[in-house]
Image (cartoon, rainbow, N blue to C red; front, top):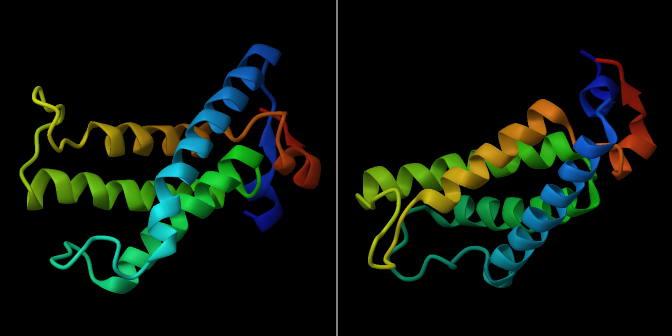
Length: 145
């Protein structure tokens, strides 16, 4: 598979393209907001007793903020989705295994439903692409189903 083909955008119906645009915008902006505080202190955002070493904290901060920006723009969406999927896989694992958090906390405490949902969204973008209303479509064209 050529690198260009990796970034080409599959054809969808207009409704599907609008749905992908809305999903990209909402989740992309959410990731930018979520990652903005981490990008301010990328090597220490987990505090004094981190669950991940500083280089991995920086990768997570970059994938959340940069990946969110890329999703919102529909720019290099597969690459951003791989970074976010990797980060959310680790975040889900840390919540489940290291901390023993529930999927959903009935008391408002820590849980892993949000990283699990974002992981699924990243998989959706890997499978379906960013849609017609994206910079990827302008740069790399469309791919027939």
